[in-house]
Image 1 (cartoon, rainbow, N blue to C red):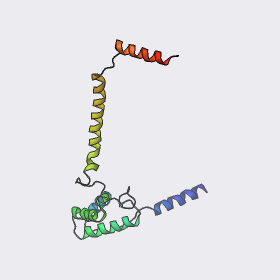
Image 2: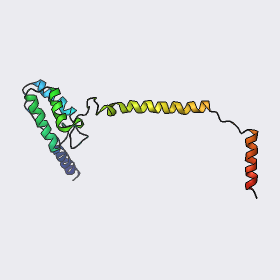
Image 3: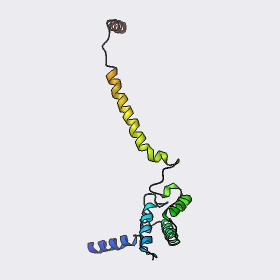
Length: 150
């Protein structure tokens, strides 16, 4: 019984795998196809590239990618087409531009701000050492305490 369940699991898991075969006119196109399909993100799955996704939209994007490669489009033209249609989100590594600048520079910005904050914290401690109360302040505290005691 255990072996039967394992066999059914293996058969069912292989049914979910993305299996597509395209006949490319050159090995270079096949290589570019695999590279670009790893670079493009599935709009539905969000955390999978179109090569690994089983979503219908990913399947459609793989067909479009194949057709554009066979039509002689360059990688830049294909990526521009996909970005124009689906936005920068479709790329795993979007280009640095006005819209994505914060995405690219925020880790460095946070690191610098954290360093400045830590530096200010330790500098404040060094420049403002804790001081004891003066005689006048101690007298004032004693008077306040006497007023509160019955």
